[in-house]
Image (cartoon, rainbow, N blue to C red; front, side, top):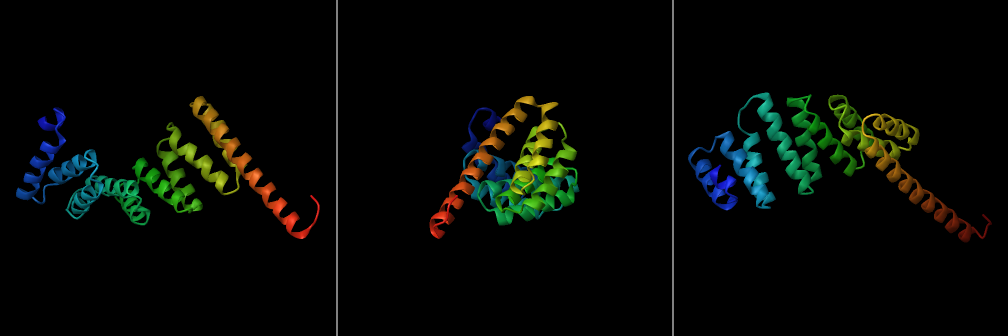
Length: 199
């Protein structure tokens, strides 16, 4: 910890490696090693440590955190198919872990599983009603599902406690709608050109 405080992560990692060698079942050593490896941009090695951690016995709270951290690392590595079950395990061990629901939603959005993402975001916003992040993503998912009126309701809700985020979301939705409209018009133009018809 002194080495970390002094800004020497490589030296700190060497100490944590020694701890893991001596006590391979020590949760603190494995978790700390995984954390330092992330700081050193050694994501794959960190994932290996985190996988060891989820195999150790522990309380539901400890296991939830371990599975969440694994999901987060896998998501950062672009391994979405593996990140999804990790986040799901975190929510099983701790159904009230709002960040696990959010992480799961982000993976589902990437996989274009918008209906399931919406359910995860509803869990997240119920647990963290004053955080704008889940609401923002929920509005985006509603838009992706072709439900702009529900996105509008989210904006109205956000405006009560996060007016700046609501304004940003409104601008982003306007740009998305504009791009969609342009794409639709382009598609119509192609169809007209192909058939020789008029507008």
